[in-house]
Length: 389
Image (cartoon, rainbow, N blue to C red; front, side, top):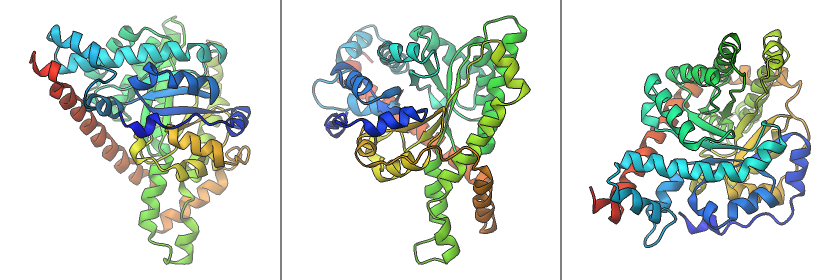
């Protein structure tokens, strides 16, 4: 894994992160892998920097496997290779081990938050995103292998993924739906999760399935700003630049809060369901530290603040936010009308956020498929695995 990330220090002054926590905002760490577990740095981030969740990523594992000489996966990789495990089986085993370790580390946070935080998100094979039955089989296998209450299995926001969300919520398996790039799709994910909880309730089972959704508002804003042109474009376009992320967050949060005020949710709540958080990605590639943009993360940490929300940031972006961010208090509640005005202004300029979000969903899914292929190649290229293939 990149030495640059290992050199990112835990912020010495946690006042910004404390103030976010007081506003009901969590900070999750993106792109976590085995090195941060082995060297204790993740434990330090959780203890000293108010990190309350982590997202494990295929790209982080790939970077570590491609390091020359010793790496954090070497011993387990050698044992699996000697058993002649396939590359796919090796990746599953490495991922489950990391997830168990991280879940145990975050367990005290999960317990203190009464199951509302302290989550660990583990990836599935993105190549299965349009195959609902196979995805569900993989989800069940990973949930069984990890066997921790604070695990969330990452599910793609495809049509097949929505069916998986329903099934997982009904079976009490936590899911992390990511990435999302439109409020329309977020509404469908929210509805799918509730449908699954209702199935559990009707069947007399415990209503406990968690469904957390991540909106990559930064990627949408970046795409919109590219379409608006440069700073010398018309004054109307210039006035819209840098406003999309906050507008999307406000619309999504309004949808989320109105849902929690509905009779449907009250029935689920009385059956034991717990409200889930909205996660905002803090950079265009929240799980990839090499393409992270700390300035973008700082601005969004300042601008997007509301109860039961989470910012997903790389270690570098967390450190920058802790040093420079000045959160402005709740910026989402009651702000949907202004956000709809921004969306309408973009539509008048020919930018349809729903269509753009769907395009970004497909683009990001293709990238995750490539990430998985690169991870499998990295496993195959490891000398101890080549010896037994």
